[in-house]
Length: 375
Picture 1 (spheres, rainbow, N blue to C red):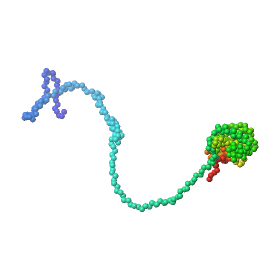
Picture 2: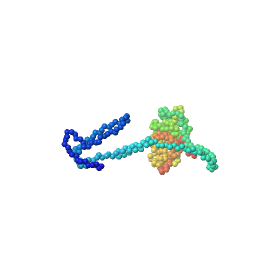
Picture 3: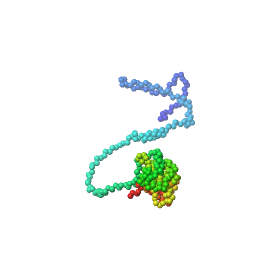
Picture 4: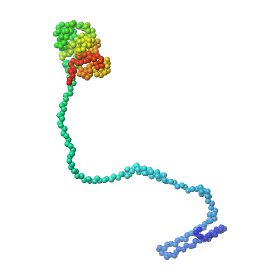
C-alpha cells in the first residue's frame, strides 16, 4: 500500500534456544546535543522495540461466519418523541389553567385628560310657562245615609228572676180570674191604660176555667231588646190547645201579666188569619224562630229570611213567614235574630204572592223597630 516495495513471504525457522534477532530494527534515537544548563531538558529514554507480528497465528484464527454476521443486527434506537410531546402537553395545559395566577394581567392606567370647561352660551328660554289652573272649590263632604233607625222599646233595667217568676205566675193569673172589678184586674196587667178595654171585653164573654198552668219548655227573648221573658202555658176548658202568658218584671222585683199575648193566643187569632186569608195586613203577638224554609224554592230561599211563627201553646197554630233580605225589616231581623233562639214579638203580617208565584205570609214590620225607608 502507498507504493511500498513488496516483502518476501515469511519462512518458518526451527526453534532456537536463543531468541532470534528481528530482521528489522529501528534506527537509534540520538538526543540532540544541547548545552547543559538549568533550562536544558533531560534526555529521553529509548523506546522499546515493538514485538514482531505473528503471522502464523493470524493464519490459524477461525474464519468469519457469514451467516452469523447477517443474522446479527444492531440494537434499535428508542424514540423519545411521544413522551416528550406528552410532557410538553401536560405542562402547557397547567400553564394555561394557571395563567391568571402566574402572569397577572397588565393594567395600563391612562390618565384622564383635563378637559377645559366649554363656554356656555345662554340661549333664550323657549319652554312654555305652566298654565295655572283655576282653583276648584273643595267638594262639600256628603253625609252618608244613616242606617234605618232602630227604635227600641223601653226595657226595664232590672234582672229577671225566673224562680220568682215561676212562683208568681200562677198566683197572678188566678187573681185575675177571681177579680170582680175592672180596677182590680187593671192592677194585675201591664200598661192597663192601653189594654183595659180589651180585658173587660174578654171577661164580658165569660171567665175562662183553668185546667193547667206550667212553665214553657223554652225561655224566649223579646224583640226588640233581647230581654229574657218568663213564659207559661195556660190550658183552659175554652182552649184545650193552650195559650201563652208572659210576665213583665217591675223595678221592685214583682211581676205583671202581659195581656195581648195571652188574649190573642187564647182566642187563636192567628189561626183565623191563616184560615180566612184577609187582604189587609194585621198585627199579631207571636212566638218566632229562624227557619230553613225548605218548602220554598231555592231562588226564594236565597233572597228571603224565613221564620216559623207560633200562635198557641202547642204547634196547632203555626206558619212560615218570610221577609226579603234587602228590605229594612229584613235587615233588622237578620241582624237581631239568631238560629235556635225563640223570640216573642209583635209583627205586621200579610198574605202575598212571591216572585215565583207561590203564596206566603210576609212580615212587613216589627213593633219597636223603625223600618221606614230613608231617602
